[in-house]
Image (cartoon, rainbow, N blue to C red):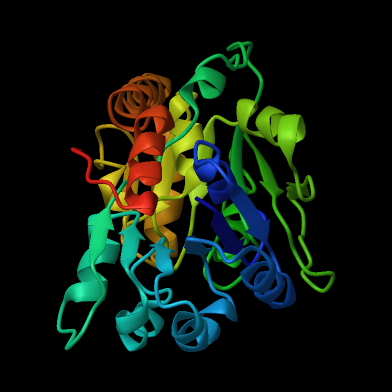
Length: 307
């Protein structure tokens, strides 16, 4: 069996396929076409937006036995593409119930969908040290793409509003050259590997200000470390945060509520501690990627599994 995994960029989903024998990877449409020609794969896995979707009718016509599996990470991305190409897709793996419902609800035709929730590598995240409570200023951070979806501008407005709070404001993630980050925010650049891990280790509060999202990997990683997450209640984030129990949720786009939530955490150490402990427990019980990976592999090759 040969599997081609195609994604528009290298991301966290790449490691999900390590247990599948005979896997090949393509990152550009030319590379995808070349692998289709030279290796005649049995399965193609598509992750994220790409031109490969437009090629599916031709590819399936040329390789009618080919199994096509796609990933759907949130309730807005690729809904229409999946519906339009339903006849050419054998399975959609949705990361959340919200994403699955968005695909199926009201659709005249939708491909088969299975919900398999993502998680985090607990063996790594749980072993990371937490900073000692030594009287230092709290660190409140943002980590993600600097684009409209992840909405970094909301974090910058938050930091400007909270300039007098005893807080260190930090950001990390890929951004364009034109995007300016003003004081009091410190920008750490695009981080990977150990540098990314150290950035997360140093946070006390993670802010997720997305306009839309699925189940952000960064949220899992923060919770596994006992870091409190404050987030706009969008997409599948409410599947991961129960407000006041293991984090704080605020109405989407409500800058005032976001500020009040962070201000509350800054002034209430026992609350931060309790929310952090509960967040860590959620990940241990529900977010271990080691339990999800066999389900991904089985779904990709067409085997039924139990949740």
